[in-house]
Length: 435
Image (cartoon, rainbow, N blue to C red):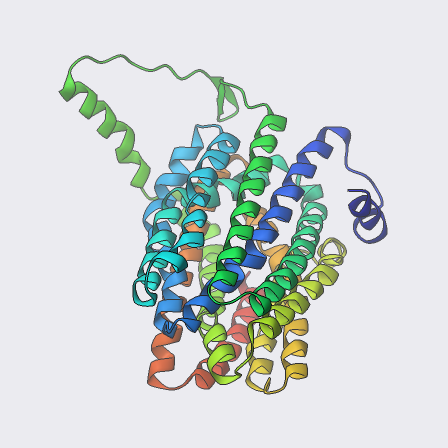
């Protein structure tokens, strides 16, 4: 934390946050720091593992498509569910229920044959996404409610920087383990490290909840309202009461879709569509076409997140100078560079350069995307708006994750990389024009 304090003064903001925000920001930062351990192990190598045991591009795409499908079904009820509840409490409870499934990944390679492993891994992803939907919707709203607008760029830079540091260190450690420990034991160790990161991240979500001190009295429309539970007797009245509670959860907020937030939703759908078209193709192309080892892949990912760290130092300053919308649009235009350069990454040096450029671009894009969505959302109705954003995100994820492998089957992985690059550039222009 001394390092982060010095880093903040030098690169992000010379003014320290007010005392009432310090402990809150600490747990926001350490949550993403430990999540970087999860990302640098399980999330970085699960698609590589599936590819190495013979999984297809479609099966790799299912890792993102299945969660996208689940969240599409559950994002609206999750947003409605969170509206009159303690968001911070529901976030850490749902995160714990979701991340326990990472433990299953430690044992699947040792118990089951390779054909069944892919099915079980995808099933684990499916099951963890059900409570994870509440986590995703709730955390975006929690970040908006728990961070004043003037400090969002600052916190985003800190979170992205710490995420990049832990990610790089974990990626290098994972690459070394996979290079020295026999297959598949090396992957089991890497998955166990990821589970530890998930547990520690969840601990800080719980401590974040403690710092926010949620009250039992809910606030609605600026007024304090105490919610009472009506006691009903008999099975039929109870079932009717339950139905009355659940039926509004799936109702679409048409009033939001009639407002200016509709344009934001459409643009975010397009962005995530062009983002995920290439994601199932990248590991397949890296393993099958470039023939790179796990250690080289881990070094490439470490370079990627090292430049994410460097780029994150400039997010707050760039946001202050040109605003969230322009910064987001420009960064998405440059988002085309990663698939473009990956086409020519036949040498290790070019592969590392591709990851360096991709990490720098993602530092800006990932650092500003949630601030852009929060800026476009009314502050008194964040759960409902973030739920609709999650629908746009996961619809783009679903169609992109399935569309990329489908297009690769019709053409080739090289063609998909080229299409992905062009579509990313056009998406950036659309954000600049209509965002």
